[in-house]
Image (cartoon, rainbow, N blue to C red):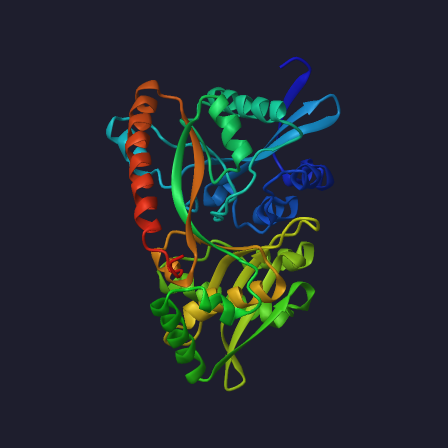
Length: 384
């Protein structure tokens, strides 16, 4: 690597936030979830820590005293919170008496949002960083390396380094510069337009109204209420929430501009919330990301109103380019969120298992292509 040096740093405090964020700002596909503040908050709030199976390191590439490339690198003893499912691979290892864990993941915990994972000044630095990651996995005797929801430049570097690629499907809404929500509805087929109006009417007829606040206008009381709803939703499904209240406190303190909160009220009292993340690069198009929601009362179609229609109306009003609805969920297509392929990259140390997984990914990839074709035939928009 000539005069390039890989350094593995064990704490967010060991990495300059300014240097990290400067690399991110120069990327073609940045997201707020890769900001230093976000990753540090996950660690410092005890949301993603070794105790919960996420041991964070920062792998950095240096040329002299200049940071050339960097990425978060988690050593994990499980596959929770990733949204690219490799449980079958882990089970196959176990059935053959081999250890799949610990493994390495280059990702943002609990955050299936596509975007840059390998921050780099140029393509050469990005490729050298991937090579350094594979070498580190070999050195630490890790079973595998997984880069999740990468940007095009990440995937190109991983392909050059010989990693295997895997596609999954998400659903994103694109703003066709609609002047208002009614214009957006007018672009849909009659049945989809009618269904959305019926769903919105059910919420309004139940006496529910919404207000929104952004950034520093989100009050502590609203953050507290949001967390109460968020926590309840997780526990209703039998799980503790991934993220702590302290994580969101840190978000409010360190990157408030990245958050948009919708609060549903009935009879003057809050009863549900949805939290949307926003892109933070000043010169880039505005992108919104559906993230978390929760409710203290049950109202028919409230989830659709809080998580889709209110955010889409806001995006139209404020000129957001895109709303990303997150992982899975064909039902999102009825709300005009269209299928988008996302890509991850994988390296397995065991040659025989690597061959088996490569054959599996070829079959799975063909299935994804067929699935995308099938979804494309079910467009919610009017026929041209």
